[in-house]
Image (cartoon, rainbow, N blue to C red; front, side, top):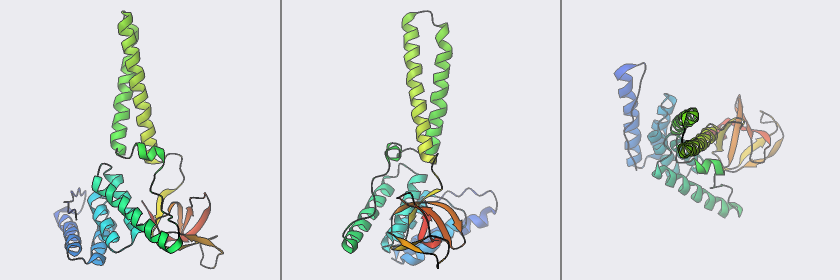
Length: 254
């Protein structure tokens, strides 16, 4: 198990709070090491409740959930770890393994696997880059492209003009690609928040009430988008682009 140190940047609370949070992390690690995965989950989740959004905590939490066979939650937190640290090969491998294992379990129970392992093309293309990296790339390439365009009229030699023009076009294209990457990461134009079903057979209803008409069930690991939280229920958009309600505890945002 990867046991990385957390860098805690605390604006308030001082050293005592930092020690307390570090204790939670270390207790979670110790529980995982002795195969007490339920306790490990509780300790790591306490860090999230305290406002710690850290790739290592998410990775360890995903690993603990995976060890418990709760693969929907494992997928959720491996995805979150990758959102925070897109280049983490261990988290990418863990996500793939969680999806494959859940798919095999579903295939045995249902005769088919529900979990989809292939992300949309735009997400796949930019999967190894963080939003900050793409934003900086957009800023730098856009400024270079603008600078070259401004320098173009001053060039008197035809060959230099051609070179500047090609350079401006190239950096303009890179700026456009970076902008597309930022848009893909921030999910511009998509409603709600990306989420995953964390319990097999999550009941889908017409309204936010257990007496509302039952529309069907969603499989563990199935991707949805959370549009709103309404009491104990979440209004979601399913893969079939249908709005419905599931228990809030059955779905987790990434």
